Amino acid sequence: IRVETKKSTGEVVKKERKVEVKAILVLSHLPRTLTGGIIAHESMHCWLKLAGYPLNLDSRVEEGLCQLAAMLWLDAQPPARRDRDPMAEKTNELSEYFKWRIANNAPTEYLEGYQLARRAYDRVGLQRLLQHVRQTGAFPELQMY
Picture (cartoon, helix red, strand yellow):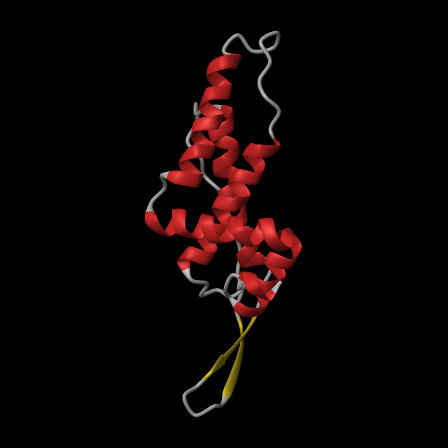
């Protein structure tokens, strides 16, 4: 990844930085929906680094995008069916709880980041949101669009 930084003198310093991901570790025996949400969240961290996004993203921006990825994955999951899952009702309740936790009851930087990311996503869509973050390192001001 090519990184450009500006010194206080105004001089631009260009550096190459190798970024790699060796593994994503997730505990075993977690519910499927929780495991999927964790993998979506952690995969977004990896993708942001590997795709050349600023390495010093504000934690609210990075965690917000990762929480958004988890929520989008959870939203895309079909409800469990009783004929295939004897615990379907509990599985569906658990999935709704995980979504509620992301949207309402996460640690501060995750919650604030998710809320900002979600508003921007709802307004401009995923592609424009990611493009803006790549260019600026911040969420778009919603009045811009």
